[in-house]
Length: 134
Image (tube, rainbow, N blue to C red; front, side, top):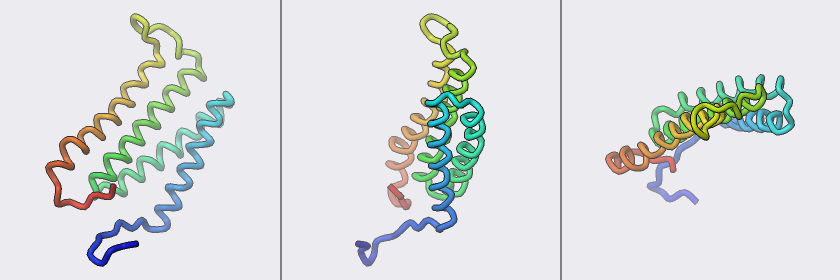
């Protein structure tokens, strides 16, 4: 129930439909990865990543939404790189020490963590009067 003075964050239906379709693409990408269906997995990277970028762009006016959506975008990037490394069998090739090329996925994963850390530890505490969608 919405209180009388409570602000709301509304998502236009066409944006919501795109977000829901994004989930479908993401699931097909991960199913293809699981089943080692290379062509489908590789093809699904494009719409999954593209829609996540569009969602981040459309929510840029709200820092809480932007940071979370950018984190999702870099997560999908890391996940896609990891999938590609397994598909093309360079995931277990040594890079240095005990680290393999698959471990390079940690870079975009940490980019997502840093984006969220920026929001929660810097932006949110210093912008208490701004609309927070969380």
